[in-house]
Length: 245
Image (cartoon, rainbow, N blue to C red):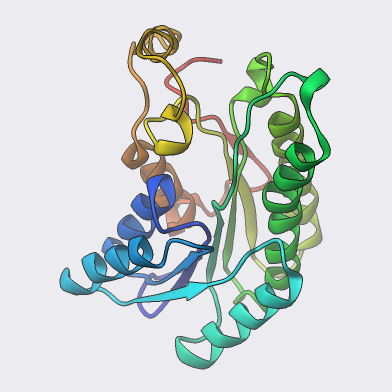
């Protein structure tokens, strides 16, 4: 798969890891769709960065938990840039509570976005992705670490890992690979919010590399999976965590 004239759709791409992925894929030569739910200003900043660097980018607002909006997003991308070649399912939320305090809003929000949102985009991609395309989902290394208070979040990500392996088999004959990236602790607003500095430092020491990951670390892994060199990697979960697990 050559990246020339290829289209990448990155969900949740207005900030954090998603923004870094969008910029990296644009640098790799993809026309990038910067999906966002509510941060229009941030999404436009990402688009402006890409276009000012000579790339092609399109912002598109859609809540991935809404199947109708996801279908409309794919329709719009196809009519403006062409069929999607690479889908990156980065959109997600993380809320930490012990199971005893996991009220229905806490459960529904994470299932709706992390799990149902991923299903919605995967379903569209399964019939609309270009032959030779890539689906890159997002899990989390907490699925293996099984940390307290991460129960509902980790459950949604474990489900994504299972979906990844199943879709990889269902794409038989289309030369489409389906993989997942499972970051460890990464310096994003999502991860750092509400955590005291001493906790962040302690989590950094969990890795033998003794640091927190960066969004660019994760974007590099996504770049590899979107690249022709990854063609023999399929149905896998890449744990990009510096050796935490």
